[in-house]
Length: 152
Image 1: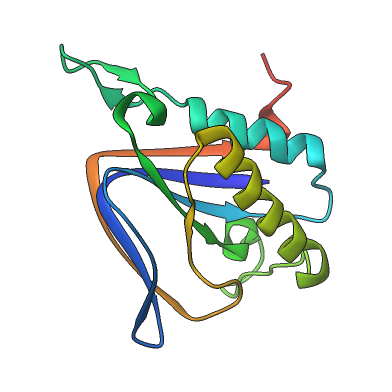
Image 2 (image 1 turned 180 degrees about the vertical axis):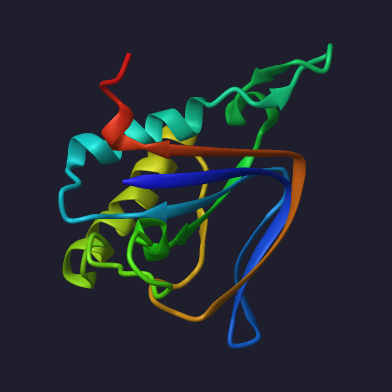
């Protein structure tokens, strides 16, 4: 599983002219799921997202997590995070999980994040042509990959 976290002051997702999810201060999380991903990966990543301390404290240092600032999450499914670009100029998405695996894992990530944060998770629509608007704060952008969870 891969996630790109973008610290934002506001963000929204629109599908066919309708807003499907909207947040104030918090994270836009682009989530890529691959076939090898497990429930353990999902739980690890959800806890990392919720606990990531990248919001400013009284001294302007990145010491606060989502819960400390009453932050929100806009979660967007993003299979293109597994693009392979080694050969040619047309990316391959062979590593991205097919919808029969990715949709249940995406839905479980929503539930897990809601449980951890105690807040409703704003979302896009899986597989839709989504338009994401965001005001990246900092900018602060962090890439996480569950394959790195055991690295020292």
